[in-house]
Amino acid sequence: MNQLTIETIDQVIEWITIDKLDRLDLTNIRFVDPYALLILHLIILEREEEGRPIEVAWPQAASVNRWMMAMGIVAGNSHNSAPASKNRESTLQPITRIENESGIGHVVDGFHHRLAERYPLTESSRRGLVAVMIELFQNIPHHSNATGTVADPHGIAAMQDYEDSIFLAVADKGIGLSTSLGLRNGYGGLSDAGALDVVFHQGVSRFDDPGRGGELQRIADLIRSWDGVFALRTGRALYYFDSRGGDVYDVPNFPGVQLGLRLPRRVLT
Amino acid sequence: MRAMQIERFRIAQFGPRLGTRMEGEQAREQLIALLRSLPEDGQVRISMEGIDVLSTSFADELIGRTLHQLMIGEFGARTMILETPALDLADGIDVKLAQRQMAMLCLSDDSWHLIGAHTPAMTETLGLIIDKGTTTAKELAAELGLQMNACVNRVARLAKLHLIRREQIGMSGPQAIYSLHSILKS
Figure 1: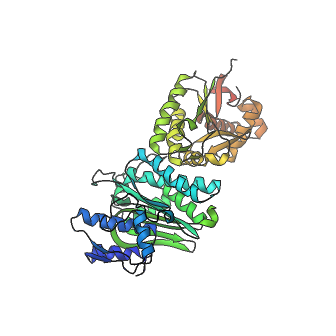
Figure 2 (figure 1 turned 30 degrees about the horizontal axis):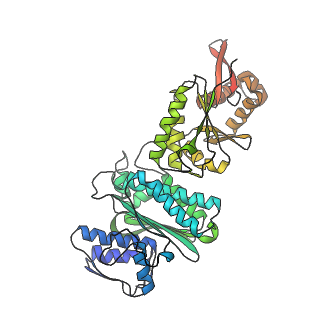
């Protein structure tokens, strides 16, 4: 494997959670996308919390190593969310911790500022992106620990730009969609794929208030209209689509919800 | 007839980019306080001037929930109207009102729009009431070429959503007769 991306990160999850490997060899990795970076961060964190830290052989490619450090993943100190100073100019938005609803405005402002500094986005795409961030970020305090059972409940987000796209990722290792929906009468016992189905096709949320829900469905519609790539993973299911289509796929189990959006720059700028 | 008291509620007082449900909930408390401070037939015009981004969550907490309370009669005959410098700024409100099966009058570029859940028939009927300022169901039925019952149903829906003001002026057999008033008329 030489890339850690939406397409390959599930292999890493399988090695760690199913094959129970204690050593992760990333030496040949030459590219990492923000979605895979956040999941890697959570995998390492999960194992540290279990008292069985993973030994990671970090990428040999200096540019990848520097980027990962600047994004906030540091060898031997993976949960450090403070960005390293090296190579700061190539990172768009390092890994940022999201803990509660009251801090979200500040986090969104930070992401928005970084984006606006680098790109003259069109008004409608800038507004659309900011609104998407608000909804995605607040899902973390609203849903990831709705049962109150998660130790250190929080989420993380990061953003990176490429020649042809902007990539936004948000992740947590909370209770996941099916457990969150299961708190609502009539939605208990859903599989992860079943939860994705009711969220994306019926706009259901764990609240029975008619004004709640539908945000993820609308975000998916917006990304589809922009010809972007959308990946949302929860437990054992992944909902993925790109401009050629998509589906719900079986993936190795991992706690929480992880989401990646790759947006073509041509529609944003 | 005395003039209706109209007060403005500027959403931008809470910031240009809004926001979370928690922010919307805090703003709603102030909107409700303003509504309650008005006379029974008063009106709040919610202004989006100065707003850069308004999320659907904030919109639902501030406007969707307050409009629901208005609809179920918690604020008497008071009304609310949205004012926006650009219609697309109100997209989030439109989405959430539709989800809640409610509608609201929105003023933009010197013209009115109906946002949320509405039908062409509702828009047609409301438009006629706004043009006339004051009318009756009988007059409307004649102009729209409708059976009286169909017209009364349309008017009842508009009145329930507080999109018009309805005042009983008499009885015709068992049926109440109302005069119907545009809420854009001060």
